[in-house]
Length: 306
Image 1: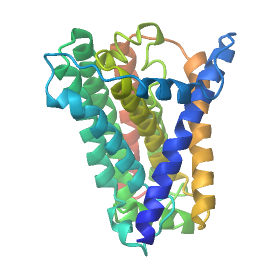
Image 2: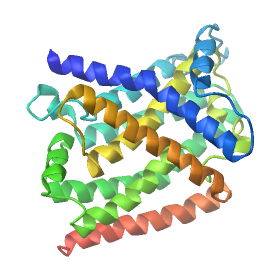
Image 3: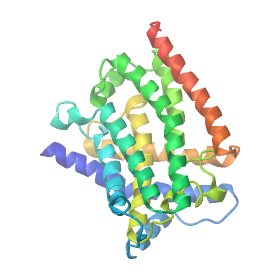
Image 4: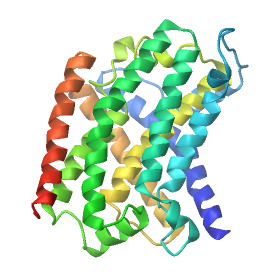
């Protein structure tokens, strides 16, 4: 019972705090572009305003489109619950904190996102859904190869046990394959946060957010909250595996985790604003090939015993 309460506690805290860092990122982006920008709490106001509005759904849509917002939010929350922030391997839910669980939930979230865009009947949404699946084709092989290196080095896929091994020095950056894998996984984390050049701000409604084109009111607010949670979950997964330093006290642990994740989340804005802007297909292919090569080097280093 205590473990369930801890899992609920960490999800609730992140749900409440994540929009704050999104607002901080928006404010920082505006300042870097010499604009006034909104304050840190604008994301809260946007989501609350959307929840006050009624739902509108296309007549041609089916249950996939109607239930997708709830499923997306629940899946994002489940991913956050599976990340071991406030519980240890002695607890019963430590067995569910597994890399494969998070990978399957992440793939399911992306699939439902794409299916909902197709079910909306909007051609822009379908284009956005196809773009989302293209991201998966390029990002997920790199991510999986990096995680394979980690699991082979740790001889387990349990995140709690991997955390303990990194903290105790059994595995870590002293192993070249582990260190190289962290570089490629860091790229995956950046792509999953939707930053430039993988997010075109000038065409956001047509491409990046096109699959949300038919959502409105509370549905749109729920989906936007789910996307913010998903971004936090991806950064949290990186920190859990490669930077798991934290406190044993659950309250201190969640505070430190939120601060570390938020710093990474906001820091990505600097790359977003100072980096170049490319075409989606050419830039993603070029960057993905580089990241895939790095992850392959990491796997090769492990195989040869380096």
